[in-house]
Image (cartoon, rainbow, N blue to C red):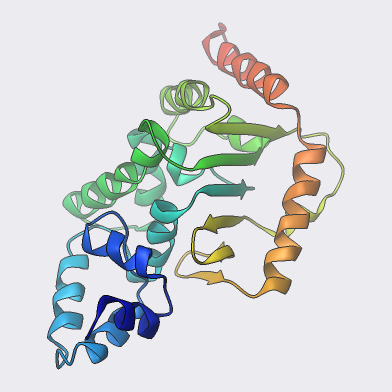
Length: 249
């Protein structure tokens, strides 16, 4: 079977498949059984893929999102409750993972923290997607892990938020009701796949490529950027909150 035939069976471009073979891109979870069938691997390929991914620290339901992050040319994120994983410090991530997994062994938490921080290579490297983030002001003020942890998190936001690669905007606490109050979501622009939207809960994520959903979330994200502070004003607010943490009680 030719590369072109395999790509057609997987509903991806031949260039995408070439990048997969070169280790530059991945395949979505739903594409692995299809590839196994196309290559007549008898389940061997699917099992090997599952074995490898059981060791990467990511929950099964979240792996498609990680793949989208790696392949995207543009990422738009709105977070109403916590700092997005792509921008979290290890200490901040550890607190969230610990709270979400009561009773989990320290080694298991360490593995998940490491996995989350590995995702950040796309915002720290010389090449990567354009990332636009909108968060609520109360996210910056919630003392997750205590003053030292949130101070370190604010410092990292100031470090990483460097347009045009990463743009961060903050919705002030005195902003009236807005469409983002329905919950957090993300949008990905992925070559060969177009735009996808996803929402996430504690135990699931739901990437969707239907145009109606994508258009709806694109509109909401535009509205959120409109009510949020401009990037320079958002940076000034983060710096102000950071100074407040150092002020004498």
